[in-house]
Amino acid sequence: MALRTLNEIFRATAGDVVDAVVFNGRVSTIDKATGKPARPHLLSVSADRAAFADLVLAAVEPAACLTRLNALVSPNPFDMEAVEPFIAFDLKRFRFTDDMDVVAGLDSRPNLLKLSPTEFEHLVRQLFIAMGAEAWTTIPSKDGGVDAVATSKNLFFGGVCLIQAKRWSGLVGLESVHALTGVMADHNATRGVLVTTSWFGRASEEFANRNRITLVNGAELKQLVKQHLHIDVIPGTSPPRRLRASDNTQTGRPGPIKNGAVSDAAD
Image (cartoon, rainbow, N blue to C red; front, top):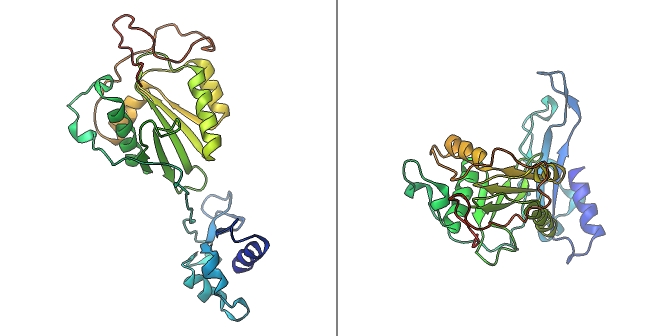
């Protein structure tokens, strides 16, 4: 079935349209340990057109052919033993910078507002790596609204994730969250994450929940850094005690210095 599916797709599409196909085979069953419905992956294969065209499908032995294609096949399919599916990400549209180790240069309890914008972006990248993802920081001014890119091969919760890192001292407004959805659509991203040292309004949180965006405020960032990077940081700012129910009227841009807060217009 896997080989037949690959063959049909290649035959039905032009070479300049589809160059490679990934097939993930799943079955519907009942998990014997929990009694709940489950859909384990029993086979995962990636094949490019040139390699597949070289096969004589009428004469191959399916299992041996899949081995030649470096497929992942369940060692015990009748026992529903799953394999981790193959997922490939196209990251050619992004331009990445060289990695910077920000964590090694941090003091015992650093204030994140004292980091440069570039240092903060690399810190966020290191955080995502510590959380189990692959992550890269984009080249400044050529990122198209993306500060970092992370990928995860978890088929259900993973994919390409676009990250914006805002080292701000004031409210991150709704328009910033709106803008991220446009960038996600342009890059066909699975999720978006907006990380800040400050906070978000209720309207931003509601909009993010509807649009595959995760918001990480300063307090949550502090907890994540402590849990995964083992550093106790100071976000540098705290939200006002009384937040408006909606931040639709807020600009989302760092404003002038108020109550000793640092304006961050360059971020």
